[in-house]
Image 1 (tube, one colour):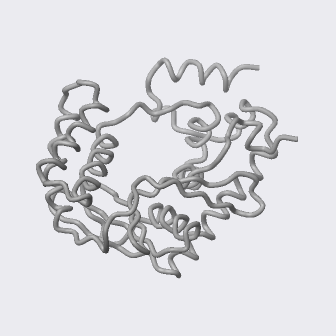
Image 2 (cartoon, rainbow, N blue to C red; image 1 turned 60 degrees about the vertical axis):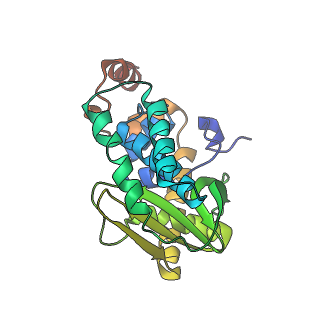
Image 3 (tube, rainbow, N blue to C red; image 1 turned 120 degrees about the horizontal axis):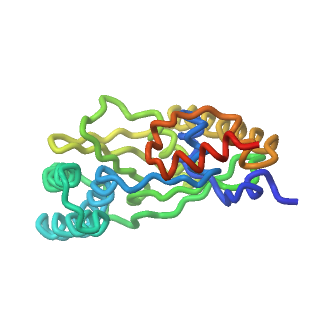
Amino acid sequence: MRNSFERFDIPHLSPSSLNLWRAAPGLWALRYIAKVKDEGKAAMWRGSAIEVGLGALLRGETSGEAIAAAHNSFDMNALGVVDDANETERELIEPMLKELSKWKAPSDLNATQLKVEHWFDPVPIPVIGYLDFAFDGLDVDLKTTKACPSKPRPEHVRQVSLYRAARGRDGGLLYVTDKKHAYYPVDDQMMDEALMEMHAAALSLNNFLARMDSREDVLRSLPFDWEYFAAPKTKVPLAELLLAG
């Protein structure tokens, strides 16, 4: 017999999906049940580009080489589209990487985008994430942002806590803006609290889906903001799905 996740074509969870379920269940249903995906955004491409650039720096490449690699990553995602939003985000790449060059890595880089898997009993599928940077005895997740937080954000702590639990290593968050950077370790107490939150979210999602017979049931059971998906091509099919029958 298929479990409640398999019935809805969900082979695994992720830290971001559990964070979204906690914050906005209706939006979670649109993404993971209705399979309505966000189009790529310039801020996301900038974040990916900075990861590429920092990886190059950590492997001993020059600042110029790292910046070039990051720009290339951004341009490949942007597919040649030049507009104000893309240009604004692209211009942040160089100063952010220059800021990251001031951060002292704890050791040589061991791996990037490392697949991590963790199970919450009795949830029948794993939570899978991808760790940004693995060093000797320490895992670090990178977050690019317009404003550096004074403490790590809860959703980010939950993500790193899951990596810590799965790998049995220390972990932390590295934030960077175009003007400053900050590193925050995720200690054992933070991890324990965050894992309880993630476990509770996974259990609630499992229980919810077990009571749903169809994707129509799921979508009709949770409220969401129509304006988040404003494109007519998205609105019309969803309206028909939610209001039919």
